[in-house]
Structures are given as structure tokens and as C-alpha cells.
Length: 83
Image 1: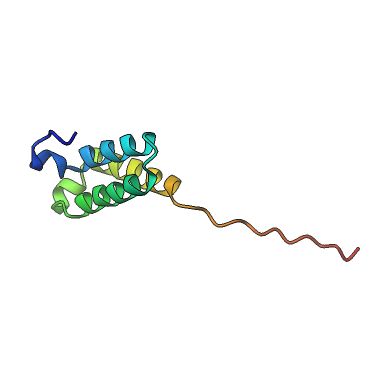
Image 2: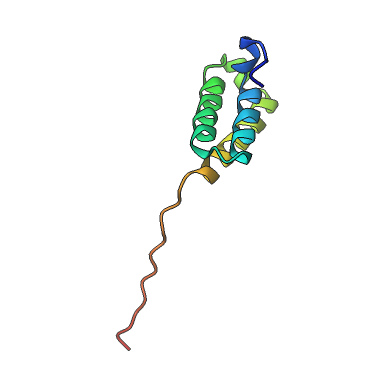
């Protein structure tokens, strides 16, 4: 993907693909950073392009991927031991 022209490397779809590839290679921190870049690339699009179904679907995929890369806080379960 590094051989792609600069204009292509800034496209949200390519950034997301790069993030996915980096994650598969075990580079989680870099994958998360590139994923944020993909989110920003979509955010920077003109409103009429952002509203297209393809970008809505891509945004959902990127957000789900980003959430999966983020650590989740441990849930605390209160146990009543007063009985």
C-alpha cells in the first residue's frame, strides 16, 4: 500500500484497509492511529459526499473496528453477601 499515489493513501477506504492489515500483522498501536486517520478523512469530506450510503457504511465499519481495538473497562458486578 505504500506504493500507492499520495492521493490514494489519504482516501478513507485505503486508510481503513491499511489499518486492518497492520492489525493482522500485530501492529495494534499503528493500526489504531491509521484508523483514526480514516475517521478524520471521512469527517473532512464535503457534506454531500459524507451523506452517501457507501461512506455511512464505511464509517460504521471503521468505528466498529476502532471500538474493538480500544480497551474495555472491566465491568464491576456488585454481589450482595449480606444474606
